[in-house]
Image 1 (tube, rainbow, N blue to C red):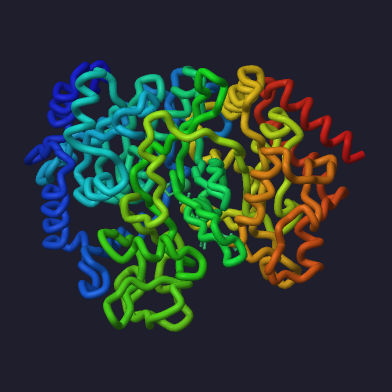
Image 2 (image 1 turned 90 degrees about the vertical axis):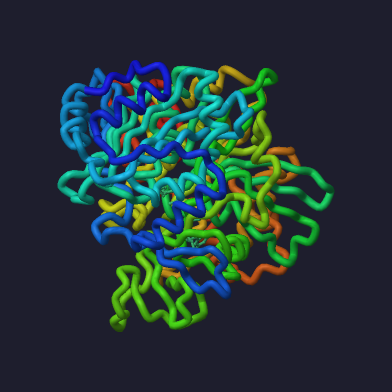
Length: 580
Ligand code: GTP
Ligand code: SPV
Ligand code: MN
């Protein structure tokens, strides 16, 4: 077994190499030359396919193994000494057993392969809030993705050597056999072992494994939060800049909200992206909640991206982007459902398209550096992060959840987050199309017992009187025919404007048992084409439906037994009583 006590990066890497036996070890320096050479190698061996040079400069297509197209929640484990620390929200395995299993799989697994050593820094390299790790991997595809998405290479290694601590991540694609696939986390050792998948969150260990599962554990110990949240900067015509962070479950609109383009009726407004997937939140000395984005790039959902929905994303995909599991058009351009032009000829597996079949996998993704985003905020590089005015939770719910509601106070906001539910999406390979509880959008990502996590969230209530307001939104309400009631995308700024005005005490609301909602007159609806009945549905509170919802939330919380904080249970009871 590889001890996790190795103090220096070099010593640890040597130990990993002794176990895995690669032909060669390559320490990544993070230079563009290195990236180009890795890409050239991938092109030679078919791991990347160059796509239309004329239009898409330095863009490539990667086709993953057809059995390896999303995160695998049923094969993802939190390995803590005490099973209760992982909680009912996680799969658990005893650390010794997990190490035995994984060491067996890793033994000699890199024979005939190159082992890439990727030192990375999650967060601006000079930020006190940033944390480092090293991922060793036998996948050059992972190395190039990490180059686009994290601050990796020489600078990160320097910081690691200075600090002497780092998260130790071992990754091998193994045989890509779904029967021999495990994503294991050892929060007590600050280490990760991932075997048998080359896809996204399973393989790019800085992202979900480190920046959420391991970081959430550290955050609880140290008094901060690691969350599945976008961070967006909103500047109004008066030049006032405000920041919000929002948690929506996977494939429920974070990237799109983070890159929002204001509608025509909002002249002078500017929206810029700080982050699109992960936020690390700290209280500063003045009690202000500040956020950094630990990432430096995006691994975003491709389907649905077009000039109308997300022109910033559309623009940034024209150069230096890697597409994973999209189709190809007759022009040899990447093609996906919702692209709106071009004719698909090959599906994501590289086969000629059969009629009625989707060209892109529903969880096909783009990888691109944040530097390519036309709306990238320079504040994303700010070591102290950005001050957060509002925290927003949201889900994909055809019924019940209104367009927007505001929590009465911090405690009610924590309940809103803990009570989140959302329809499943293609982002996880074990989704079943039903509605599932996804508290704070962290069901797949919280590295410890949810009951302890809610307690940690609640503890912020007593630590500052300058906490952000908490809100809940739902862009996905449908009518009986399945049509979305709200136009979404750029128009979501109307909801953000109300939220930000509420934070400044400049907008009205009506109080209801489930929270404060805008009336029609409280929202800026100027120039919006929406049927009055649709709006009424979006701003309605269905009392009977909410009573039933509160019963379901009680059942859900009961799974966590005595560990559920009394304050949270009391808050649920308060809302249930108010509903009558
Ligand atoms: P992860 O990267 O999986 O964490 O997802 P995400 O939350 O960043 O989701 P993303 O923004 O990529 O959106 C996923 C899907 O939701 C895409 O197909 C979008 O087109 C769609 N979507 C995003 N925002 C809206 C919206 O306001 N309204 C509607 N109807 N669809 C939206
Ligand atoms: C998600 O599923 O929430 C993602 C994609 O952001 S992955 O990196 O694969 O987790
Ligand atoms: Mn995500």
